[in-house]
Length: 133
Length: 133
DNA sequence: ATCAATATTGACGCGAACGTAAACGTAACG
DNA sequence: CGTTACGTTTACGTTCGCGTCAATATTGAT
Image 1 (tube, helix red, strand yellow):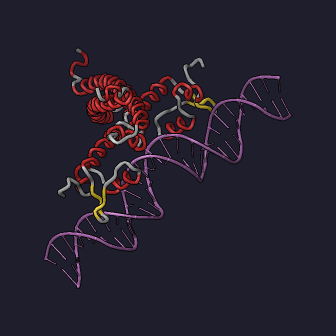
Image 2 (image 1 turned 120 degrees about the vertical axis):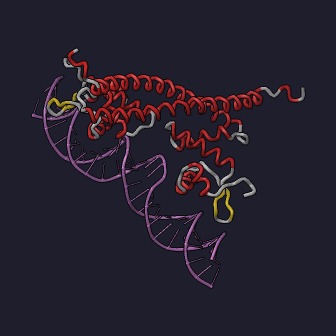
Image 3 (image 1 turned 135 degrees about the vertical axis):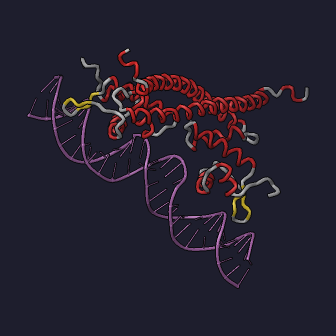
């Protein structure tokens, strides 16, 4: 506890995931908890990574894509070649996310329009008094 | 051709999907192409729906969620009860999309920050002349 | 010491969203 | 009339992201 680590259960509670999920991410090399005997202990870094994982998932990236992107946030000890590749990868992801943002903004506008339309129809159904003026 | 319909191949070319996908969406009741003999013919409405399907997928909605939402865009002949339910559903989706937009904006900012950091490191690697200034 | 709670490693299962192969129809072209 | 091209159904296969046992430690409390 002194070393700022968390057990698997604490992680599950904080991030609302199951143990299975955390072990799965570890198997996929997205997380690297240390072992205290048999038990996994998650560091602050693991928590930061998990947060990014959840975010990436939300935006539709696969775990494999996320795994590669995670290196960008922890490339302190990365080789130069790796660094360049990661940087290029990040550029693509950034472009993708900005495109997604645009589409999302447009989709929100359109959905609102459709909902206004639906709201109008519902209003008529609620108050049909003025039917014949 | 005169009736503003498209064959399955034309659809595939225009939306960059496979025939299998279109038949799959039909099986899931997301599309309703008419038949000319055996062959499927996709109307303008089918195309509009497919566009919304692709958009929904992009934003992480399942095909089932999308199927329900599609009714909002074509509820001219919808019952009142259905209309209310669909409207409520749309509100939830709208909220979800707006939340997603916020997170996306934040994620973009953070990613940019990280990239600037990486870019700085790359710059140092490119021009180490001032090493001992 | 024992019992319950929590952890671990397999291993199989599962729903979503298609891919892919087989077997068949039909329609046009030379 | 054959074959080439495109379409159809049926059905099994595949990948992803976990869920769900089962069997086995390990740990903490009584």
